[in-house]
Image 1 (tube, rainbow, N blue to C red):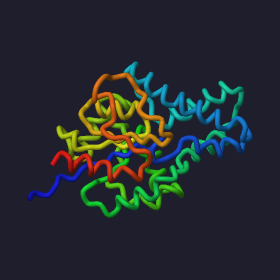
Image 2: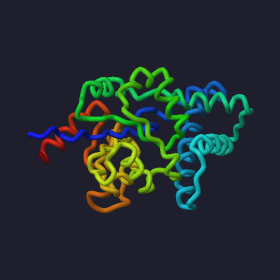
Image 3: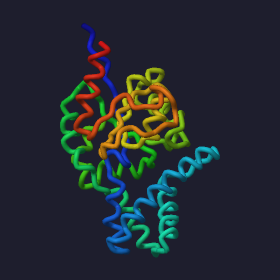
Image 4: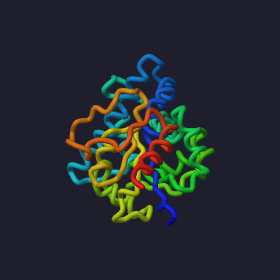
Length: 245
């Protein structure tokens, strides 16, 4: 029997491996615990909104710049402000956010699986993502697990534009074979974007809410599989593959 073609697992970074809400701890140093969680949520909301608006306008601004501008937006919404040194400190902290509790065991399991090739696939700049993967206290111990870091800078647009998923295919040697790539993401918009170009996708439903996104009808608008944590990814992906061989 011919060996199975390796399957690429493309892990989203922000909201899948790294908890964007964990930046609230750094915000609390400036504003206290009571409001920091709300600021972190607003920051993330506008960070994503800015990427989608730029896609619609066919414009590109580096994700690091978007992240800083979205922080300013969030602070204004909540009637707060920070000086330049404090802003720089927060931006540095963004590259060292905490991982979700299920990340360690999942990546350790993947380190010995030769059939599944993990990569990081992110809207972030190469500098931001490389710093998170190689230097953050939580994620850096697993840096060697990832066979590549793919960011969207050269594509010049953001998820969920089709171009970024096709660019991923080129970077991981799966051009024209996007069905051999699995997106692993906790972000529904990312899942739908990947499915729309023929990729497979595992949606990470840590809250157990079930799939709620209704943008696209049929299978193309839904994840291939749903997992409640990253620890289920290998079993679910390999189980799906076995049923089709």
